[in-house]
Amino acid sequence: MKRFLYELNESWRIAVAQMRSNMTRSALTALGVIIGIIAVTLMGTAVNGISIGFDNSMSVLGDDVLYVTQWPWKQVDDWWNYRDRKKIKTEYAETLNRMIERTPNSNLVVAVPTSSLFRSIKYGGNSVDNVFVLGTTSDFIVTSTIDCKEGRFFSDTESRGGASVVVIGYDVADALFPSENPIDKSVLINGQLFKVIGVNSRQGTFLGLFSWDSMVALPLGAFNKYFSSKSESDVRVKVKDKRKLAEAKDELTGLMRRVRGLQPEVKDDFSVNEQQAFKSTLDPVKNSIAVAGLFITGLSLFVGAIGIMNITFVSVKERTKEIGTRKALGARRRTILLQFLIESTALCLLGGFIGLTLAYLMCFGIEKAFPSFPIHFSLGLVFASMTVSVATGLISGFAPAWTASRLDPVVALRYE
Amino acid sequence: MNHNSTRPVGPLVIDIENITKDYVMGEEIVRALRGVSLQIHRNEYIAIMGPSGSGKSTLMNMLGCLDTPTSGRYEFNGRNVAEMDDDELAAIRNREIGFVFQTFNLLPRSTSLRNVELPLIYAGIDPETREEMAVRVLDEVGLGDRMNHKPNELSGGQRQRVAVARALVNNPSIILVTHERDIAAHARRTVHLRDGLIETDHAGFIPEVDLVALDRP
Image (cartoon, rainbow over all chains, first blue to last red; front, side):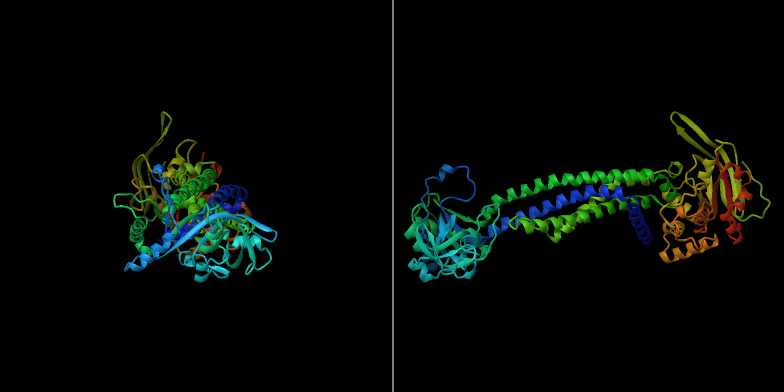
């Protein structure tokens, strides 16, 4: 064991000396690994970022909220069985709430109606098109992760009275009020004035997926009064315990069948959705991006590894006599194997370290230049790429190192 | 091949009996050694001479445990070398044999000290003892002030002394030296004339070991 440590130490010193004396060659070879590691690491940060972006967007939906909608969220093959479904009405929410109250030990907390459509919003000379306008009740905040950066969400009274107040998303506020405080200003939606009473905190947007940043919420009463036509409605229901989501789903389905007055033999004419359903359609997309991306960038690392293997073969060849001398002085096969493995690994580690540093700086730059670009540098990634570097060194160095360790000392000593 | 020694000899170190070595060169089998028997005792100086192609190098490789014979018996300090595997041979070379190669074969990028320490590293000796031993031997060959110089910063004679120090550092049972033909003609005297060995000779080191000088065609 001790001898192994001394040999290891010796091998490190040789490796460092070797790299120093062949600066240009080592630098060029390491460049292959550097590029490979940069590519893989950047891809890793992007995959990480995409994943976080997805999750972020997903968190808008909430993992303890069920959505009663006209059509299911997931892809269906038999769409013709769904096309005649009736719309979901916002009144269902009240009926559901009464039922929930009457049910002892219900898994459901509260039902919140939402209606939505897209409209443009104006304030002064500024205007934002295609804003997601949501009409709902004050219970909405219970089902949602949003919170107000400034101001507040509308109250129960405002909600029931259909007051002309509005809570706006971060990006909407940013566009309409670049240099003013939006609170208590009146914005124009569909020709109607609404007073801004709250601004949501920034949530971040990703690949155009849904984000609170580009929406506004107003009381359902006001919504119905001014833009009832052509709106999409659904009911979201908060679940008491998210570990009992399946039971809650069954219970809600039962309640909805009663609301719709369906006979037992009739199929559901509505859908109860959850975040998970959405996730399971998005996850394969996310995973294939990750696999394809890492595979392609992995190829560049592979090319780097071939460079390392090549240079280690050259190194073994030109130091054949040295290998012979070392063997004559008592180096065993394992010692020689170790020496060249460490040389190739040291080269890869160096490349990996430089590559990682460059990748980090690039990430930093990208984050500064394009804040919305999904990129995420993590400690796990550092470990992963260092592990990959070492593995690359070991794998690409093995064949040459093995050749070196099997050299016949007599032949090696005679080599010129 | 035979040898005469007039000096008092110590115990038997090398005992070779009827060894042969065949090389396969393409379709031809080259019989480099055809039944050599040789005994070398402690305190003997042996020069092996012969015309080009007579098998000196091959015998040298056998004696140095760099290669194993095709047939015959080879005992080194009573241990059967002919049957050993690569790593066992490496251990014998490391502990029992000191090589002084004709071209010295020093590691070009390592200092004298590191070059001399090398066999001790392979022997698994700890760094402090290692350095102590290497410094002592380098002092004995008169290179105490050249320990941190690399081979290209040393003269030819100094390089040879480093090579000698490296051969001596593990306190081997036998030292093998390869020399040019004209020098080998007067092997023993030449060995003494070579600056490195003179230093050690005066230090009283050389008489403790047997020296086999083997010329190369």
